[in-house]
Length: 429
Image 1 (cartoon, rainbow, N blue to C red):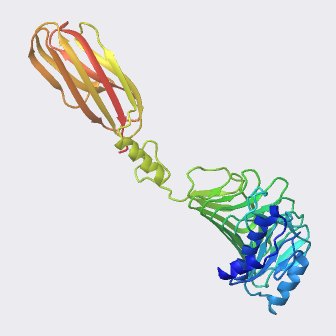
Image 2 (image 1 turned 90 degrees about the horizontal axis):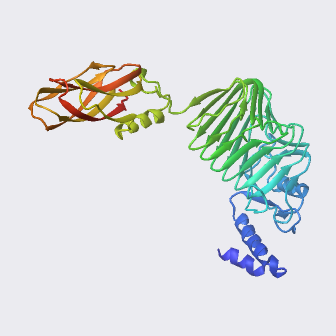
Image 3 (image 1 turned 90 degrees about the vertical axis):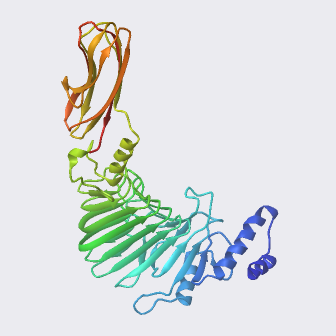
């Protein structure tokens, strides 16, 4: 921190409106200088000083001097920090650049749509690394947009690319070119973690193109990652193997993939993909006895939701009824469509006796057929009120059925009124 304060004291402040920006720049330069990486700052429109460069050509030349690639093309760990606070976007001009082991990082810029620094890769930019494999990292609120009509990165047979995106990084294609093409039996690993977006925009080519026989592209999205914009294909497969994994709240948008792509994610909302794409939801569930469920769940979360609904006594149907003044048999009908699962029926009935009655019976029924125990009262006198409540689990019976409470009296006209309430509840098993 002492070094940071020293830099602040030595910094040549400009006019008052620029003081805040200049102070932030001084702190930023101090922090960058203390980085474990060899760090270069690309600040177009700014002031060149120390490791701050206002042109990409000057920065790349300095990087090749301070962190030169080996004979095989491998470069020491290097960071290029994009500062577009003076001029935005920062533009990487056409040319071939070895960015092996390079981390591209950004900073907050509230003038950009992403809220971070914007680096634009011009048409004709080619990013390379060692022939056998290389690594590129994009991080810290940096938005990288490829605006070319050609291929930016090409991975051939026997080669490998590890592409890491994290901490608010954006990677987008806005023109017809492809950011990364796999055209042989090579391998591309894309690991996106924490607030990352990977998208092909309108008129943009795919971000990734899997076109190499025997090759594979694997995309792993973990933690609030958006893959695709919901309209355009971020990944296209015409040969080789392509897989996309989404975990921990990642969003694999509709139409993100096209071709023979295996998509697996833990999102509960399925989204339509392009032709040939197979979709698997993590946490899928196949019931051993589908008939015990209504409907048969396909995910663990769906099964738990049904169980929770049952535990909370979710009422599927309820109906009240007032019967005629005199009847030998009074029936309360409640039509309800059930599945092959059990159905629990609860009936509550109150009757008033108009005259002495030798016997009053109560029984739950399905489609008019009494089922379960018969509850009754005998020796009632005129004016007596009798109430009965019965709960019974009916055996599995698919289709629509009438669940009723049968009320019988030993003498016709003995009941002056019947009031009844029925409740039907669907059970999972």
